Image (cartoon, rainbow, N blue to C red; front, side, top):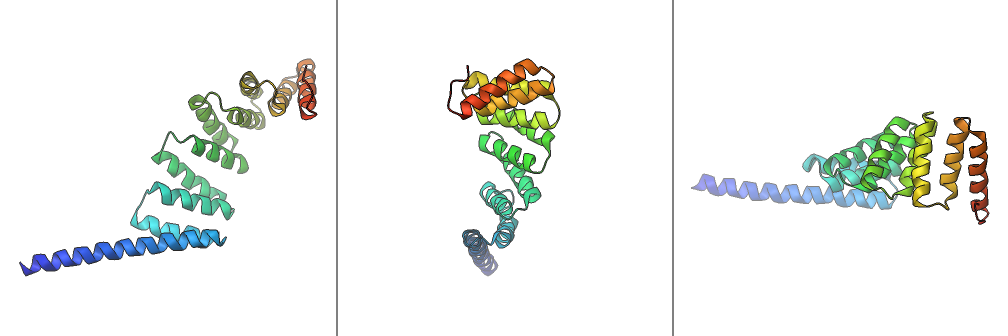
Length: 194
């Protein structure tokens, strides 16, 4: 009987200590982040994740700490882990695509922007970013298709016209490229593109 009481007491003490330690790391990590001590914040979120592996919130906060500290490969890894935990998070697809662009991994970028546009068929920035990534991959037909998708959603958008122009120019359709460039310029000047 005594053994059971000691065991129960030990378990209660361990759970309390575990909870307090975890809270301490999370509190310190958030304080470090506010004070722009991003390395320290990431380190403390790592300690918190040792107590609760695959915790979406801690992974996300560590990813943001890495990103703020310009540790982009580590941030990308954590954002991808977050996406594995919540595969329908549209903001995560955009974030990962943006980081892939920053790291010049355009294949990764188009993969995530394309998935996002399949989930959200009205996401103009995702179509535009996919178009830009395809341009950088020199896949001009795909870049043109993405720019056209964006223009179908919003005709009066200078960025979409510009990416369309770049794709057409790269495909050696100079006449249509010039029309698209002119439309982009007119829209930049707040004029009617026609």
